Length: 351
Image: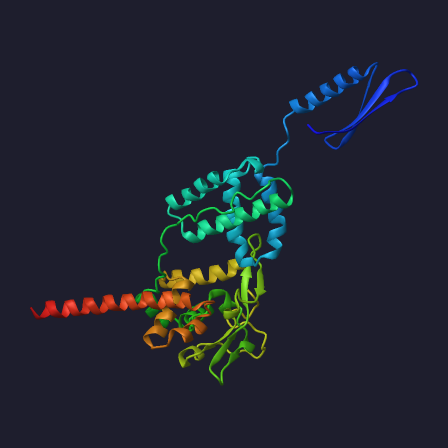
């Protein structure tokens, strides 16, 4: 206990007053002698030391961090961050923020790897933890961030995305003009547009003479709201001009108002409307493919058409060429397997 600026004063009534600053507070002690004042001071300090120090639980800090952070991240990122924070609250929520160690965090993240979670989930959780402890540092609750210098925790190996099954592609082809949901699915299959990009496409973004569409925005939804939010693509690469083959132009609706959304003429859909419309279309036709699988199928079309990887990167809106290269490498390996199987089947048939 720190003791500062002790001062003794003899009062008119004959008593001695001792003033001392203890823990930043100025306290006075009275007695008939210096010794009595000092005994009272020591008793006061002993009582302070016997009381348990108040602690700040992890969840208090995580709530403060979230109140600040949620306003600064994109709607598409909110869900992932919030889920990671909730996992951290479940693990550390009631613990004192200053008592959590790096070893505890490592064990926590390793449990994700044991359960088969991906590297992305583990990295995202670690990122959120790091930011929460940075908030604790800012508040003066800890002296060092326990996540700093922590070793990398490996997650489950990344699985390559699968293209849509050929049967799904045939069904999309056969039903391409049955509804706006069907047209949207067909559009995604043959342009590689993301679901949010296709939903936000307006009449003014289509240039029929040049056979192109301009991807300049995307629709997103907050974690607590299902209302649509228009935003720019997550990266600069997302803003791009995509080619519209003749088969795609043929199925695109044409509206007089340039502001009309191509696949949602009544206005931007809520998350429920968007998901329900596509889900009903899939259920009616027995489709299993996701929007990501349709994008992968488009990448397969580019690969089969001999489009170089740099051009494919631009058309797909990948932020780095490594992302496109991963897809092309996977397709190349699959092609080799097909060739090998064809060769083996041919040789077996001749015997």
